[in-house]
Length: 364
Image (tube, rainbow, N blue to C red; front, side, top):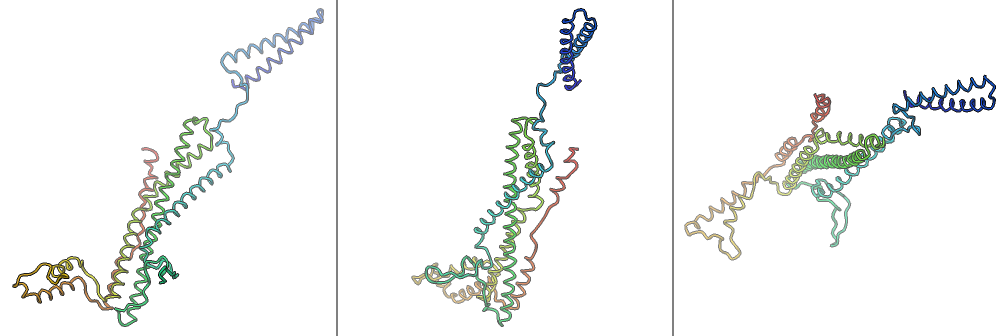
């Protein structure tokens, strides 16, 4: 028997009691009227039966509520209209977008400032006048050369400059890609921190109030923020962000070294092929100081071979570089560029497979 039946029994008992009381008063006013006496007796019996039925129901603890029941906060979300879900999802989506874009903008700004000196192309072609009256390009660390004096004829020098422009474009492209992947890495980290904090606060409030008394919107926020954190945890592995940053950084540095080789060749016509430090260290042993005496005076027998030693020193100096003609240097640049050219963008599907693994989802 539910509360509605109990309430109905109580109402019937009240009505029967009132009718029996009215019939009893009417019969008392007419002592000789047998019909009224019979009606009063019948209504009294009906009132007694109704009170007995109500007492039996209340004996089992099924008392009608004093006030109508209201839906609990936990059930509010289940009975909310569809647009309520849309508003909660849209608010969380806007928060996610705002956090991601803000974090990426902050990282890109800092990265541009820290790596601006490694930009291969001029950063700004506008000329500013400094304090001593000279003009220089504002914010640029390199200037694009207009000629290659070491290459003759001029057509070959222009071809080397076109190769240099291509190397600059590739090197700056890898630098830009490294910064972009770094911004994604930083944004993912910030998103995990922000939505993890939201999940923690929501969980603490739900635990304090109890799941049955927690507001439905609070439960929805907890579920959505936890879902965002779960998804973005896999972004690090799927898009290989750190690996892509490292590989693009390495490519950009290699292209920068190649640009320096081109500029050095255009100025000297020579190409370094080994580390000159060892050769220069040997040369320092025969350097004559300002006083006129050798740093390590040689015995008379050794001085007789001075001219021969000087000749070997000059030959040793030539051992770390070679003279290269324009044709050979063009072919060298082509080979180096092709060896460095590659897309440093890698993905990994294993984190996605582990996330959707049936064994992980079912626990079997």
